[in-house]
Length: 121
Image (tube, rainbow, N blue to C red; front, side):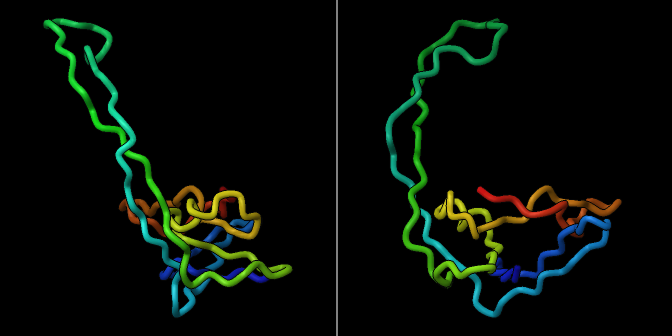
């Protein structure tokens, strides 16, 4: 299996023997346009379980994410997996050759040094 990293940055993933394998970024990352559509309101009467003050109904807007076409992603090929940024992969949910970095591994200082593996959406 060949892995193509279209995230725009190197991604290091842990292998079964505990080593980090760095997937170099391809020169042109995959991209998608995101848009938001207002789909309604959630009427909130009270907040929390313990009500200590009079409640007043308020409306909170509800939005839905809509994605445009994905750019920079080849058609599926046998034995090729693509690693994408999560927001791009979300637009292609269910495509079996698409993965995202899964579960960040942090250094003692809190910076991400790699990922525990890959996740299929």
